[in-house]
Length: 193
Image (cartoon, rainbow, N blue to C red; front, side, top):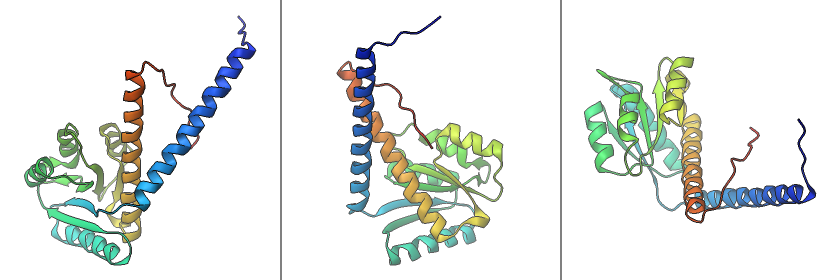
């Protein structure tokens, strides 16, 4: 079986590709501008039942705040308190340990992903394997960091990445919703990584 593509089809495909590229450039510019003009500090919740680890993470954020980024860090040491804080307050990022006593960080992510505006979740753990990473991706965790590799630079990069990723998702979601209401079909773009 063969496939016939007319010049009109090629023209329409070329036009659609051009519009997608323009939309992508607009998206990148919007996100970059939002980050450059970010006036409010990044609100971070650190959830770890190990006091030393929690203090080290908070110390890293404090160092970063003195240099260039502005963070407001709230700490807690257990699943229940984290659940309450995340249900009552807005956080941009939640950095949580995988093991939280009788619970896991994944249980918290699963429970709180139904919030109107959940934070971007970053899971930290002493042991990260492929199965754990796959589970994290399925739950919508934005990043996983091995505790032994945690540095202020890695922490900053991870937070910046997760915020950008989340903003991109929100933007694209709003575009798709807008397209649905206007009865416009938006094809899934091919993305080279």
